[in-house]
Length: 310
Image 1 (cartoon, rainbow, N blue to C red):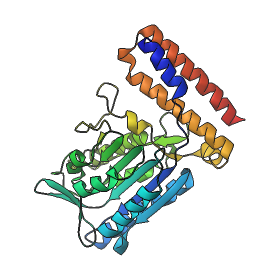
Image 2: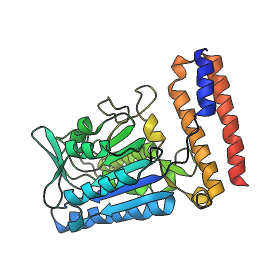
Image 3: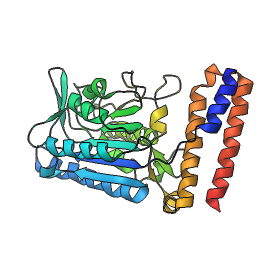
Image 4: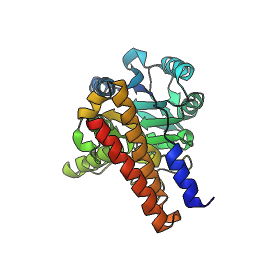
């Protein structure tokens, strides 16, 4: 069987079952009342938005005295006992972090949590896909411990040496409520779209304020890279993040509340994800075969959208 035929078979038979989303959001220590209030407000807003804009199997937010290492461990162990292999897990971390020697730690009430231990907890969760959005200072220092196949990792900084308080979280939250973040206008904000939106807004903030940028967000979702600022088919980064549907907007949000439409939305997102994957593989596919496969997917996508619009 030729490569093109194999790929065609994969396209036709790889539509996944509907996946539930599990969200865990943590706001760590602020260090002073201003940061404490800011971090907690962002975490609460994320919880509110994901509950309103997606099919949430579970959403838990930890902040203040509750945001301890022991409590986070308990929550993640609970997720591990409930989550199905077809489900997605999204872990979002807000606050201050640092690198002590060679190890990243997030500042929490009581003992801090290291990237190594966090990775161990995540490894026990059978969700087929995971997304970690580490928006703390020095978060870039956590990539090498957190990265893994089928786990997308987003960090607010490019290394553990960028230690100033970050503002990336502000724009990540904004991406979940601003229709402008939906770049492809399919009424769904993916992790890749949210990353690009928040990164661009953060860069613009420092430029507008005429300040030297002290944070440079990265994305790594191949399980083996160092993280990049601009994910693309050329560098191979961003494909998994594009498959994470974080939140729905407009009519898609309304449609997601009915079982029939929910299935159609899941099918549409799967087709869109396969189109993205096909584009990443374009260089390895004969041009004629690529156009043929793309046409099949686009036709099926149009039919599915027509069913959603009824």
